[in-house]
Length: 268
Image 1 (cartoon, rainbow, N blue to C red):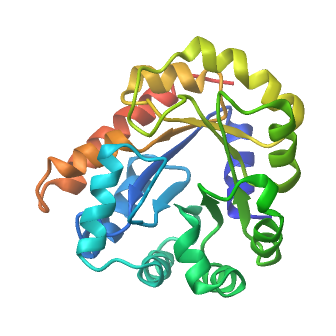
Image 2: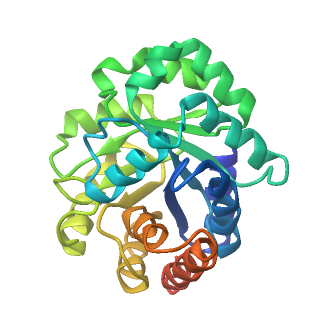
C-alpha cells in the first residue's frame, strides 16, 4: 500500500481530513527546504507537495512564480529536488511527498529515468501540471510501475468526459482547482466547489483535495467540510517570503498549525 493511501486510510479511520501544504524546493534557498519540510510535518501536514521550480510555471500566480525564480536563481534543479527527498527520508519514512511541477524538466531527464530516480529517492506521487490526461497514459504507467501515484488536476471547467479520463489514470488522490485561474488568484467560492464535487465523486473513488484560494483556518474548515483534503500553497509561500532565514520555520509552523486547527474543526 502506498504512503498516500495509508495516510488517507488512517485519516478516514480517525474521522479527519487531510492537510496538504505546498512549498517550492529551493525557496528561498536549498538549505532551508529540508527544515521547512520537517516543520510542515510538525505543524500537522499529512502529505507534502514539493514544488519543482520551473522557468514558466503557467498555472501559478505571481507568488509561486517568484518562489520558482528565487529557487532557480540559487541553482535548484530536478536532481537536487530528488536529493532533498532522499535527505528528508533519512528521518521521516512516513509522510508522503508529492512532487508538483511541469513536464519540461521531466522530459529533459527522460520519463522512465525520472520515474525510477523519484521512486528511489522516496517520492510517493507526481503531479505534472501540463500533462493532460489525453497525453498522460505513458506517464501514468511509468509512475505506477515504480509504485508511485500519478496525481492530476481537475478544474471548474473540467467536463464529465475529462473527469472520467483522469479517473482512469490517477491514483492517490485528485486535486480539484477551486478557481478558474492561477494559484493565489480570486476569491474562493465554497458553495461552487460543493456543487462540483459530487460529479467528481461519481467518477472516482479517490480522495478529492481542494486547493487554490485557501488562506486561513476559517476557509480551510469550510473546505474540509466538503472535501477529503485541503491544499494550501500561495499563503505559505507568502509567509516564507516575508520571513528571514531565522524566522521562516517558526512563522510557517504557526501558520500551518492554525490551518490544521481549522481543518480539524470538521469531523467526518
